[in-house]
Length: 106
Image: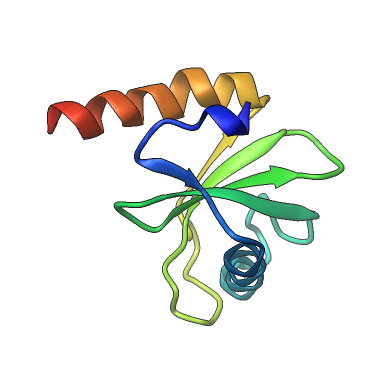
């Protein structure tokens, strides 16, 4: 499924993935739903700081996080995060609408 990413979503390199996971760990406050959850970064939007993380052991199955790259714990409610029960849900509710908006300029 990730081999069929639609722009502006793109796969990310192993180095970029490791950097995104490290930044996520720095930004998460104690009440964030991804705090202490094992994740791996698999894709990112080319036009903003949104990263798709797959949870490796738990539900929800994946999350899109808008990283802020401040290098430290964010204020409550940040980084902005959308949770998805499955990759199919992410494709339907996030990737396809993002693709359509990106190509229509909305």
